View (spheres, rainbow, N blue to C red):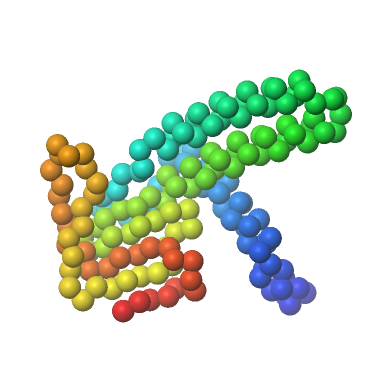
Length: 162
């Protein structure tokens, strides 16, 4: 039985299913106001307009659902189109929520470029570099010396670069 589970866990469909379940778990965390950052870390800003874009797409998809509902004949096809559209809305908001639950941040000695998949690579620097969060041109940036950078590369878990 364990060999069957091990075989299925390598299948791309399984990884996709697990990733989607994690997205919905992150949506629940976002609703509850949880953010995965250590205490004392300074959050880096989110890309501007992301929530507005998802909101606009949600409005367009809602109009599309009504139009498709009126155009399709009554029956299974209409119901299937509605379910797929609702899943698309939920998935889009879940992806945004996952970005908000795992933000990028700067600590006293580390820059973490996070995201929905977390981080899997740590880059240790021999010489500290200055990192500061993004600011508007009229604001003064506050640089912080960092000696480690963590980010998601999609490679083997726990890889450590020196």
